[in-house]
Length: 255
Ligand SMILES: NC(=O)c1ccc[n+]([C@@H]2O[C@H](COP(=O)([O-])OP(=O)(O)OC[C@H]3O[C@@H](n4cnc5c(N)ncnc54)[C@H](OP(=O)(O)O)[C@@H]3O)[C@@H](O)[C@H]2O)c1
Image (tube, protein in one colour):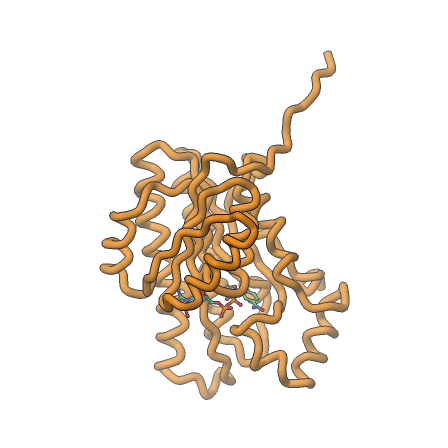
């Protein structure tokens, strides 16, 4: 007999979300999208002024963003801050860094800085949050903001690509180890979006041309482009999706 299916449900009411890098760019857009979908949202970043500005902007729409001043590369500080915060149902890891150099010139300092944030900090913060999800029987959703550069190489992006490919591998193993606890782990992989992180690259006309040549839909990504996908991956609508990469790349990786 035909019955009416109840899904999809994109609402996140009564869910608590933590967004790292939530004061700016993609993280801020993710935080707003999650809050609009009904979640209670905490945003974490190092600098307090942008955190305050983000919360004030959200408040203009009647949305509350709780702020956490935190350097996520400091694992001891992460442990301490998280111990003061409630359990989370949703974690979005957006804090990230890019330092582009030709492979033959990459310095150890730049390698260490990118890996420390994009991989190591994300790894151990996720471990802390997932431990609590599992211990408290929370069928959580963890979303790493990876990149299309977690799937293809890019010029002068050896370290950045290495960090994002590593995130993709981390996601697969987290998904298979945490699946039994009902915890879903996925990546969201944007193409170029104009933010502080990409500003210098996109300011170069030759690089901009290269970018638009490779995006099949012939435009840069926007913050709005990632908002629906974040809510989708966090929501019951994605209940059977784990270990996956959601490419929001305008078709860059299609070839
Ligand atoms: N923009 C793009 O074209 C693009 C494309 C694909 C993927 N991505 C990925 O998307 C993510 C977000 O990028 P975005 O463009 O939104 O960057 P963004 O505008 O530069 O924002 C970065 C955010 O991370 C925070 N952050 C940086 N270091 C931190 C640390 N040690 N501890 C805690 N927070 C820290 C920043 O705040 P504070 O500086 O105050 O700490 C800020 O809130 C990154 O993982 C990036 O790799 C970006």
